[in-house]
Length: 70
View (cartoon, helix red, strand yellow):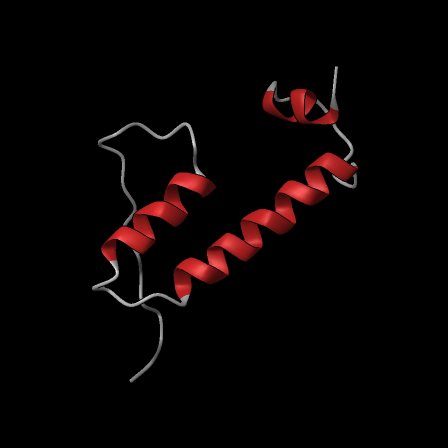
């Protein structure tokens, strides 16, 4: 069983595994890309979310939270 398979099964796994490290870096980059978009860039945001969460259903979505102080 791969380390990713172990992780998804809720078993102990090695988080430094190359596949998991690569996925973590990809997720970090996609999150940064999403955070760098503006509210009116709905299609660009949807494209990034589809890549970040490819198994999300058609009616899935995200709610963003702005924690910046005024």
